[in-house]
Image 1 (tube, helix red, strand yellow):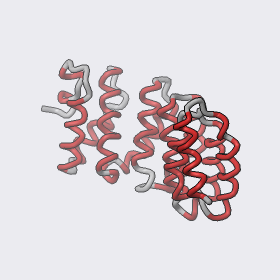
Image 2 (cartoon, rainbow, N blue to C red):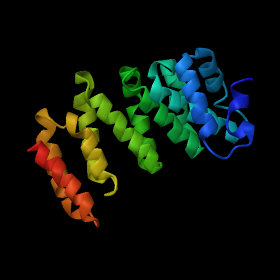
Image 3 (tube, rainbow, N blue to C red):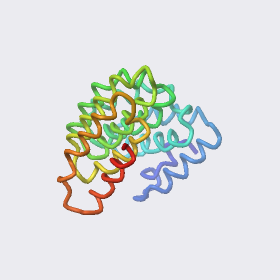
Length: 207
């Protein structure tokens, strides 16, 4: 059986389990040939096949980033797709390999920012996650931390506590006071008390 024949859509399945199981198998076996076949079909004429391929690829990347790291340019090309699923799928894959290829992912920051601002919540989630990962790298942080702060200022209130919690490890040094001001300015944005309390805990940890 080819890799494509084992995708959920090829099996007339509406659930993601076949894709998830395939990703685990490919990751476990370090099957580079299977990864190449999936990448080759990212432009398949069938939308369902395309969607399944990017799903399996970023699932592989979450387990073994090095297996998909050679295809950074292919994932970046999806940022220009008119298919929203492929767009945020490409961003999810880039997020998975941000530690593996930080200098390459860093070069795509302007395009990632555009997709995050115009795209789905998932796209923004992945952009923020990428900024956090790159902000842990000294060569990147002076450029990525201000962008991360911008996201904290403009993101929907529902997302803010999670972003702030995830970013805690990098919100230090010279940029700490900026984040404290930003987060404090948004304490009145929440309808749910639980969300506000989560943000207050982040501020307390920042001191």
